Length: 140
Image (cartoon, rainbow, N blue to C red; front, side, top):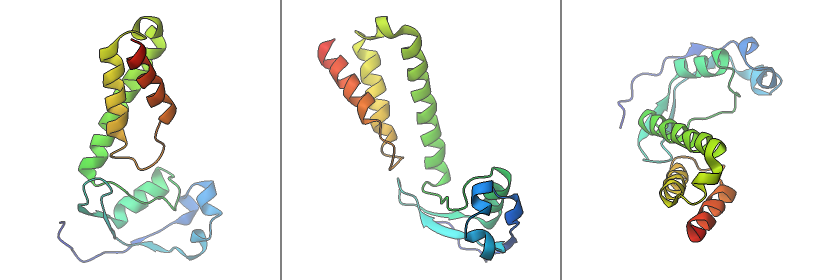
């Protein structure tokens, strides 16, 4: 569990938010960011979305103001590693679909990676792709 340090408020500049966030109700009443404590969705570790991280996320990256953290830093990094691996599977499939249709090892690895991703992301599960891979595994 992270040590709870005194929360330092960081001034907010809603004029630097994304256009959609600037139109939100939050733009009217947000003048500062403060640390937000949360539990990681995956590992349940106590984590902090720091005021400084919020300023960077909303004002520099232009993320939606209603975005909240779900994963701790370690789980977030692992989810990105998984996403990169899935992108590799997608690219390889796009380039070599005909030969990969009968490659059980490829299909099983892709399916396993999709299922692993679900442990880190509580939304956007690729049910259609998983069904396709299960069918290929059954047909191969």
